Image 1 (cartoon, rainbow over the protein chains, first blue to last red):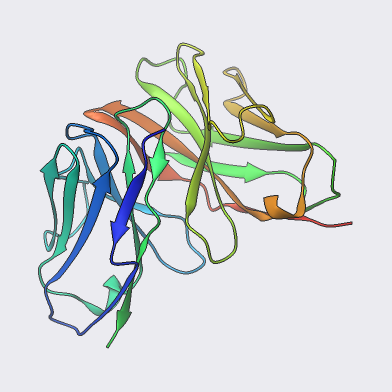
Image 2 (cartoon, rainbow over the protein chains, first blue to last red):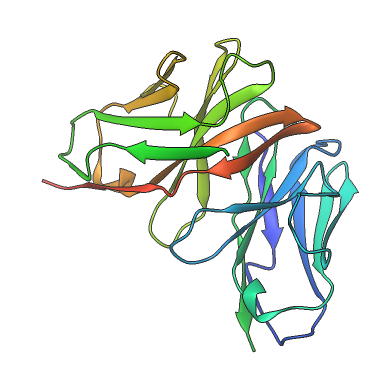
Length: 107
Length: 121
């Protein structure tokens, strides 16, 4: 199975900060990488698909980049509603896998 | 409007079989490119993909759980059913179903609210 490793596992940031989260695949997955946001007690919400495509309705401060094995989710200016846990997920393989998550907390 | 809703027992005993149903609306699993997946999340832990079923009835399972899982669909009822055998306390989790869309890769664009399943005697 393809392993997905996120870093950091948690971070503290302030409103207005630029935040970057990294996801690394154990083998090349081309651009078949998605990002989700999950708030406590809620289902995950799709932010980015195919590494860099913004899902409809998602604010433009979210962006994704990368291909092959290394990917990045960037929040250009952190807002209060962005404090949450973020997950990457690969779909290169028919056997899907998620990363371990990155929790973004208030500094 | 796409919606999904999970249903099933909130409490199961160890060794029992869990049966969860995902009832959806707003799309059809007979449409090319449509799939439904199951994902779980143990308390305080990360998301874990379990299984998926595709519009053409192809089925895929998590390598670590494939001997215990069965996924099926009833297109006339717009339902997907997941069974997990030999339940253990470590299987205590919130179980989500989600629509898996095929486009540039596969991504979960709509999710159910999740259902908490506790495994305890």
